Image (cartoon, rainbow over all chains, first blue to last red; front, side):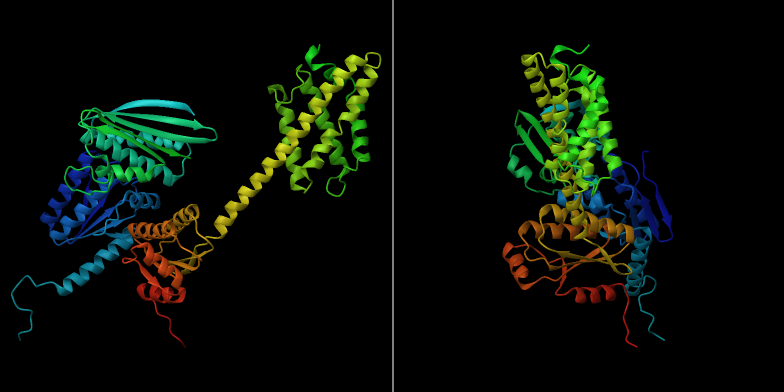
Length: 136
Length: 134
Length: 284
């Protein structure tokens, strides 16, 4: 396949990586995702890697980049479903992906996004108008 | 020590990198490695194959199953005729660069395997050989 | 026709099979090898009979070398009786003597057949001795192998028993580690814990090292790697039970535990885990 599909679910974007990606596909995903976040104003991105049998330094960097770029675009990224063997290997490789939030599965990942979105909204600067509604 | 099986494949494009991963996975399964050990050698193969393509200008990968007494090993050798690595020690030290540097690939691969050897220098190309034993 | 290097034994086995069997059983009895405390008489007789039959058949190949391919069936049979006897607690020497006692009936047969030819008798006796000795030694080796298998199995069991992952609460796992940790064990522990995290969907894992007397750099690094790997999967680890000596070692070794949550006791760690999962315990 030449692109990994990105699904939209309300304010969230959902990506399921199921193939053994070559580098170009990974870079395309990075580009596509940032473009979609911009277009849709999405606030959260969920990347499901539960099918990945291997994450090397390139894919690891891709994940870190996606999280960083999304944050710049005011969206939160959660990566879910990393397999134990993959996690052990990634740590041995020397990557710990510090800026990326993780969750065990899609359900927990969505909860995490919803919670962070909830907090985010409470402290967000209101877009319409300039006041905070305190005027009578 | 005997070589039970050997195969050499080209590593020139990023599709070849994917093929190297899949072949490594298949051979590692044949050697009955544990899942974690399989994942480690496949990841190392991915790193080294990519290095050969991106920094070495393309090369070849040789897969070998080794029998040494009771133990079985999977040896992968990546060879390219590229510019070579000027400072191997530096390259082996973890350097995560977002640019074109070798990054974690070389040093990281070393941690994922049991035996690691590298021969590289300007004008000499690069030859990296890694082995994972069961 | 048997070849000259096998001597006349194959022929004797063929023609006098049942007599050899009877004499052997008598010999076993008189040497006190019957072991009727663990082996039933009928089983012993069946075993001996099968053995002689196997010997006779293999000998027909013309070779009297138990290591040769045509003797594979006999070797497997011997592995079987060695294993059974090992499990019954019969010593390897006893099992070997059981086989060696076959010499007397064979020698009797040879003497009867070659009474008038002493030189040939001497040669054949020697061949027979070599032959039975090799058979006896096979049982010793098989016995040794089966003991090693038991030890390996027990080591595996011990490894699994000593790293139990306990579900303390919904979403909270605990791994009480006991005894000294070596590299191999810590690796197994790591893999087991991470798999249990996936299986149970637990977001918090408490690794308690109260029962660990010493921690060296390698072990500390392994623990750190476990914590990092768990985090990559979406779970958090709390390390509890760090005794003062271990705390000192860790600081001396320069291991960076900054990003890891640690608690003095398993109880404290559990309380923290409960808070994190949004549960509270109230007293009635």
